[in-house]
Image (cartoon, rainbow, N blue to C red):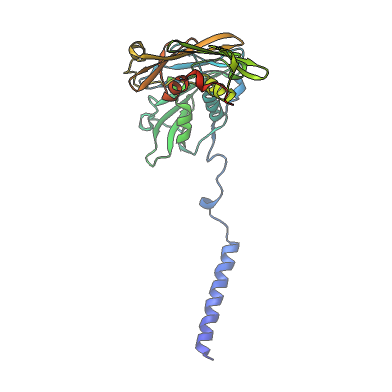
Length: 312
């Protein structure tokens, strides 16, 4: 046996044992300690049920004011009255319910401009029933990306927060608008009329399904009528951010495709669709204005009576 090799092996083994003992019994340095609550403080904590108004301000845009109606629905009141997208507003409130900072950049910041916070890239004013209005300021992206600078009016600290918070909160007017062209509930529609190219088709919902009333009375293909109803009630407007196009002018020059009339609990709502070259435009009785729509809506309305008759 090689006695010298045995000694070397014993020395190496002893060294490994010492390293293992030291690693198990040493006290971890402060840098490796778990972050304390003060490292990532809560910037803002909002009770969503308490909020009655949200104001979104962004550079080169008019402020957008949202107010909660007595029924609990959110409405846009400025710059013009519009129906608000309830899911988008709910997402904003969810973000505000517990907005945590990734870290504190400065405890007492003297120059907010270097962070894009004076003026801010976006400002969100939150007004509640109990608490006074709080102003959340969102600034530039951090140099490494993934975070943005943020502060709270009246608080001298500057924080960083994840960029997705800015995406969730800095919404434009188009982002916040309810883009539905009709308000009627598809499940509550009792009658559907489709007027196209001089032909009028009328459907009536019975306890046994859909029935064709015009042009002649006959059983209807329930799936075909339901597909038509879904296409019309789920139709949405395509809003242009630039505002350079003129949907009203395009609609006036366009060729009529069809007009759908839906009878619901609150009355009749209509949607007229026209085609201009390869684009489709719609005018609704429930929303002011003319809007560009997806071509699938035009295709759904461009149907003949044979498409809805029940096949044997």
